Image (cartoon, rainbow, N blue to C red; front, side):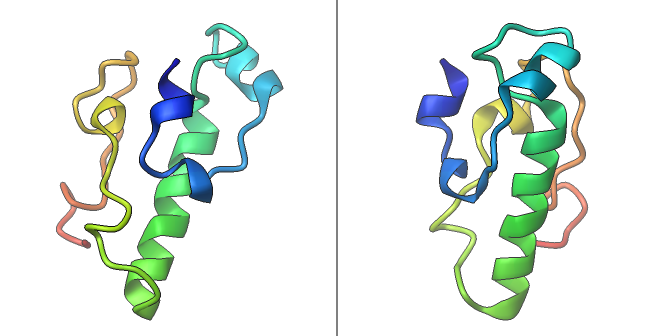
Length: 79
């Protein structure tokens, strides 16, 4: 599953219920949780606590393979 191999899983507070509400499977990523994890990543980068290389944006959030078109921080030139 995507979440177990996600590069930012340590920044994620995953909720199975939200994954179900998103219309996915219980083990699928949740749009809300992914968005929050990306926001946490960006705050930590802005604070200088981490570098973008330490927590790269996961492929499933870059290319929308989960059927979700997320604007990532890198696409918005914030990273």
